[in-house]
Image (cartoon, rainbow, N blue to C red; front, side):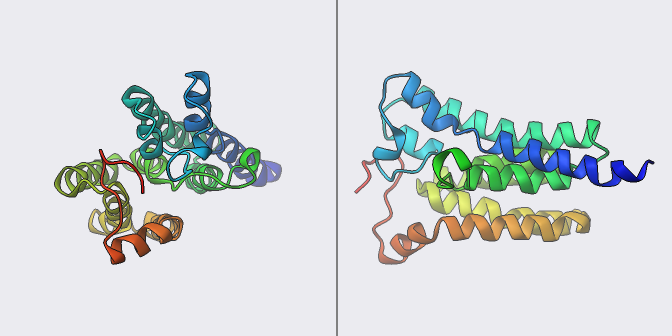
Length: 201
């Protein structure tokens, strides 16, 4: 393998991942649908849960799928065309979603994008992630808690399934999810976190 390729492939994966991750699908979809600026609605977050507060369930579902898809696509392309640099792309696409340059680094909280990432890295981890996320959401109707719980299961699932090469990465990404949810954690502790289907207070 040429020496230049040793850094060019990871660099390409980094740029590709960040650019894909920084596409703010929630903002773009709500704007195109005439639902206003998502950053001025509800919590101001750009993810699917806040899109749901516009009353557009279809837009919320599309945002969730597209945010997950960009995570999956970035890792898949990097692994198949950029010398198996999927781990680099995984970190980059996630950071791009959380801190997009186009929105002054004020992005989403990463739950849907992390789903796409783990599905691409090792689909059984993604399956556990999805099941936990859906189950907790159905049980408690608290989107933030369901998302954080799913994120925390990612490194645990990786260890359980013997993918120790992914544990540190997924642990770091899970911690970032928790960091982005710090205000939600405060509301959960105080008992004021809104449930899905109710207006944001």
